[in-house]
Length: 148
Image (cartoon, rainbow, N blue to C red; front, side):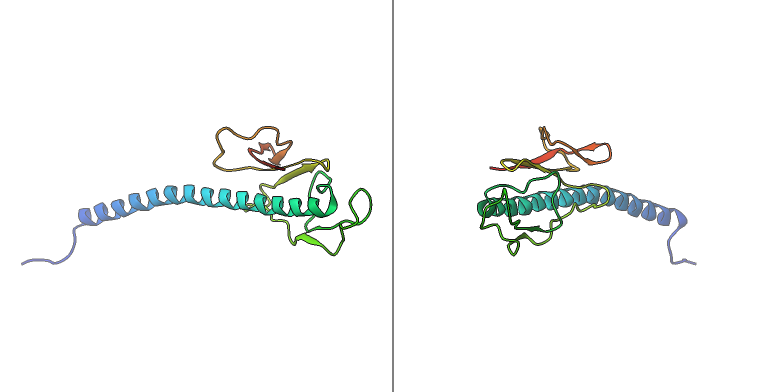
């Protein structure tokens, strides 16, 4: 008499193969997630840089400070120019790091130059130097954007 079905060994082999494939795919996807977050960080810094360049064109200086406000708008009065109106919106909402709460963007400017730094999970080779701050507690920034 023939019984139809799978033996316990056949089932264990199939389940272990599926487990191995799932384990490998999880590690493969982790690298893709890191690359995706790094690409978002680079795009965010370019958005901020673009807004800062337009701000400088109108206001004669880059935004001065050790951090950026949540919205980059014009500032009336000295030392900024007369065409730097508070009604001008250069960046409606300054982007935050994709893992906000853990990492942040670091900005510093004296008005003539600026540096904007971030922490990339897959660091560039060679890493940026002189970022001037930590992007998280004990984590140094390793990607830098400066004025052209």
